[in-house]
Image (cartoon, rainbow, N blue to C red; front, side, top):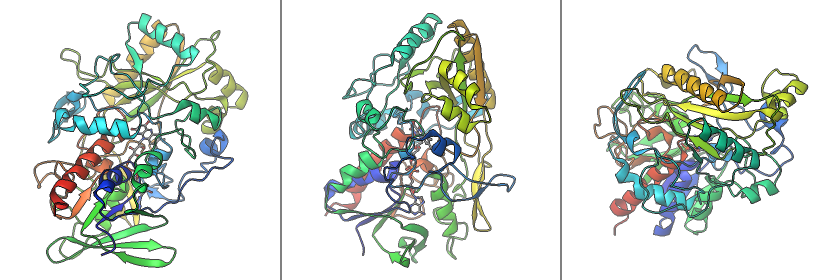
Length: 497
Ligand SMILES: Cc1cc2nc3c(=O)[nH]c(=O)nc-3n(C[C@H](O)[C@H](O)[C@H](O)COP(=O)(O)OP(=O)(O)OC[C@H]3O[C@@H](n4cnc5c(N)ncnc54)[C@H](O)[C@@H]3O)c2cc1C
């Protein structure tokens, strides 16, 4: 055996699980297709990031109409969290229950919020989350507080907070994995969508992986793309087949954990189909690749011609006034600040001429409106001619339109006569999830509530694919909490000697 546990992928799920298992002393081998992001002149250059796509992968997927596109899915040590906005927020307690939405209903989870609470707490400690539990009426119960004060508002955001309050909203501090002084030492930019090559952002590499690699029993193998998994006659995963610069390698461990991200994990399971598992591994339920969700999101820019926004990072506020159902009215979603959009970012990511982009960005307060996407078996990842086909079928769009409309109304009341909005494009599956969902019933779900495959007893999946619902908050902290729960379960059931 090459290790006691092989973990495929060093992103939020894989790295957090490695941190959880490291103290057991078991030999943990993490296989990662990417390399470590190195500091470069481009990592704070908006033109390189948003215009030239320097950090995007050299990869093509097909959309639902078989049109090729270059996905914003990132393959580095630390995965998508290297680029993320570092909002580390808990699902609300209500998100674990069935909910009626404008576009249908969500099924509820096999576990309750209370079942995951201590893992949320541990994940917040591991990722040094900055926040407060006292401001947001939708905040679920915490057994402990945040260990760090929230990232401070910049002066123009403090003023915005007052304006939003006067307009009847309840702005509150975003929980963030950001050491703001450290981040700004690397350059005067926001962190949202910027690659992290230092220690300023608490991502899977600087958080979970760093903690795991302090233990000699944990090893990371980069440049190692897992191409398929093999099973033996009793249905266990018997081998992990990898492509490396040295060619094809076969690795083995008694426990194999898939954490390649919701799209890639599903693709790998489907690509591993064999005689005993003709629909792919872990797929007797036919749910692998299905129920793909990705949130409905829009950028909403609020402006007053005579008021400037001098913020550098901006991203410290959220509003959950429309998050829970209101009487009989279904929920609409979460609103949070985007990282500050500068003229260079706007010009690089749109067709606007730079002078106009500068004019807008100097005045705009930039919001991110996010609504729940509902599980739908026809929204799915499949393989076609060796390529990933992502047929994302958006749901619950009415809720999103209502959320954007409510936000615009409130922003006008808050003193912004000009409010523009633009839905996010479909090429960046930032909040991808759902493709190997968790459930108690093996006929309708892929893993159990400890992330163990119903079909293969030595296979676990600990990335975004196991989320049964997308809620309307950012997913990374929930992925981390589930990985810690799975790690605890493995330690208790597999490593008792
Ligand atoms: C621009 C952007 C902003 C975001 N902002 C936020 C935010 O503010 N808050 C939040 O909660 N979430 C945010 N997200 C989402 C968040 O980053 C993801 O939810 C999270 O990283 C998913 O974790 P994961 O473990 O499922 O997958 P990932 O973190 O993507 O990790 C998967 C890993 O597996 C590796 N891998 C893939 N295939 C293979 C293979 N075949 N063999 C070996 N290795 C493989 C990948 O290289 C990667 O390292 C953002 C995402 C993006 C793109």
